[in-house]
Length: 243
Image 1 (cartoon, rainbow, N blue to C red):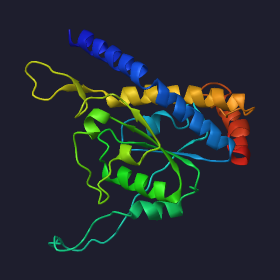
Image 2 (cartoon, rainbow, N blue to C red; image 1 turned 90 degrees about the vertical axis):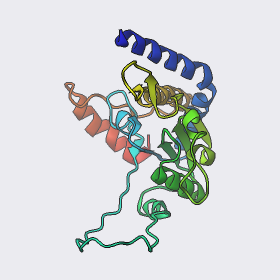
Image 3 (tube, rainbow, N blue to C red; image 1 turned 45 degrees about the vertical axis):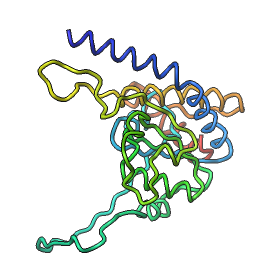
Image 4 (tube, rainbow, N blue to C red; image 1 turned 120 degrees about the horizontal axis):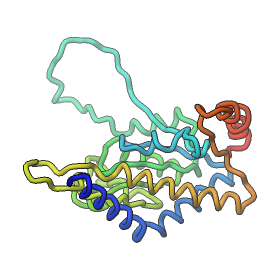
């Protein structure tokens, strides 16, 4: 059955992550703990493959994980015309987003792009690095090393990162070849990225507790008492202490 093949593929994927990524997972968790202890904030921006939704404000998750999203909205409903002669690149927009955000040098920026070439993510990594943030990248090295960067720097995400976490997804994402289907089936990166980042979280929590810091861990808001606990204890403490 395809179900059995899928389960086997997922087991193989997780085993590969465990056998190849432990060292960098531990480095990432320790970096987060060290910098948060020094007053840093942790920002997460993902190109759309789980981690920014999976990690942020979840029961059992850390309050200190905060989403970083930006967009440029232009309201200008003129008629359609050819603009191919104009430079319409959005490169550098991330610099303005960082200036408008709460980010500071020494913060942690966790960035996810499976291909490693997602323009907005690369631009953000490039500008965040210039600003002095530490970058943890989650990407597929198999994918990223098979494509070119659209950024003028020529860099891909992993080339701008302080720590690279390889989600071990194949190039173009999908895990299984199925007879009768032209595309491969079942994307790999979301599950492995979530597994990696919860693994990083365990390291970060353990390291913070070694430093005498008790990180704010959220309860499920829909479980009795959970929302009150988050609102009266975890959130105010984060605003005051950053934990």
